[in-house]
Length: 350
Image (cartoon, rainbow, N blue to C red; front, side):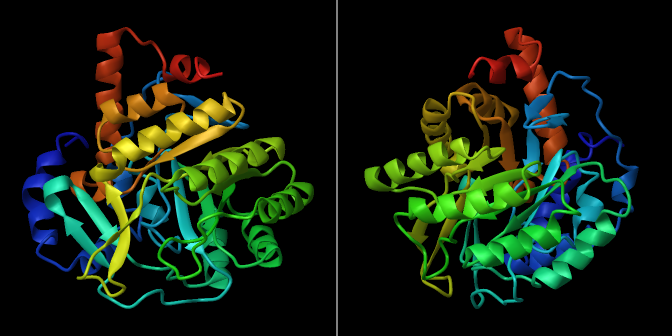
């Protein structure tokens, strides 16, 4: 049975069963199922030649489709995830010290719009535990690039995380401020970012380095984020992400509010990518994050200037073979429109 043929099994059988469970419980069950390579390593791999290939810094990715940080916070599910067609996997956020995050309930589904809301905060096993897992993962070749997403309070702690993880990760993504924490900043200090990024770039000039900036909700925040993008470019970073999500009230969550993800955020993601692309003009990879569920949406983002496509909520709603489905949909649309390679789209943005 191919990955695509397996789609009805998830959407018609497994998803209704999983959706009977409380969302975080279902999430934990999915992570548990992915802790080992079997049966996932038996899934057939795709070979699309170079049609979907993209260049990200020194990387040649077979496709722009990857898994966003948040699904696997500690690296436990990478053994299975690497076989699901994602060409990069972001693990985290990883913090120096272990933490439990916010109290439950902290995740809800909105099935009618294929969206989620969460107020997880930053639950983590901590740096030492995650380094041990990354070390085990690095002991054998993986089928996907591994990106460690880290969050810290100081330049020293970011440097500590970077130093500990970079020998075992293909790249490191710095997450700046979580919207589900009380210390979330509306305007992020540019001098702080310059200090952080220049420190890391001087110590590790050749490591793939991404920065995940906070989303923006008004013109002042937008101007701040785009200034930060320009500074990331000047310091030679590999890529930048500004998520398309935002925070909304939700009385059923423990904090009374949460960060929205899923299809409701796609339009915001697209507008954000367009804004970043207008500033970056191909000088840095743009990692698009928010609401992508289909190949058509992935192509829209690539045409707008994105280089990488983060998947998260679509994994929950479309199943374990979502990457394969999105890639097949992309290729079908490319055939219809006479597009030979994704690289032709991304090159047009430079």
